[in-house]
Length: 193
Image (tube, rainbow, N blue to C red; front, side, top):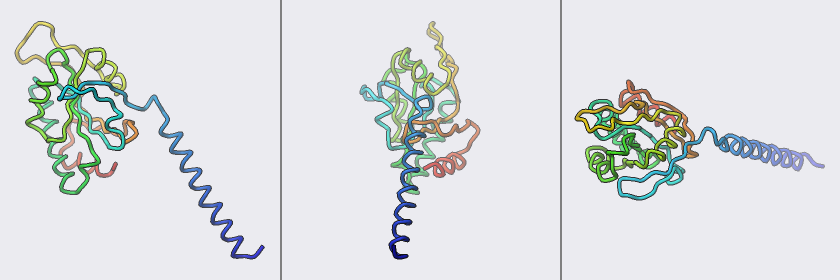
């Protein structure tokens, strides 16, 4: 065999090997069902939504409730500013910000829609039955506490204050703490895209 043919065959085998190893890695890495989030909830327009509706995009997921006094509005305002920052750099279409209510007894789709009116227009708000939200919280490995049953003003629902970053394959790939500022969050999200 002549040398150019040997080089071509060697190059082909090398490229084929790299592709085969890459595909095997992706398949093995992305088929970890334990690491994937799953949910079937109702959005602010009353439509059923699952994690599959956001496949192909990164998700910034925050659990909260519409009557929250400080943590939720602060985190939602930061996420809104992050989305505006991502718009200026052209990254916003690759990210879906999601608010999941932890207070299904009070947060109807209509109430969630009204709440989201104060934040970035790309937000999807989700709610559902207590069982559906429990399954969602379990999938994210976060807690879901019930709100007080007796109607109260200024009530609290215990929930996580972190933002979960979910990749296009529905895997949690980062946790952004409440203390992170808009610049920190924006840079972390851009680095993951």
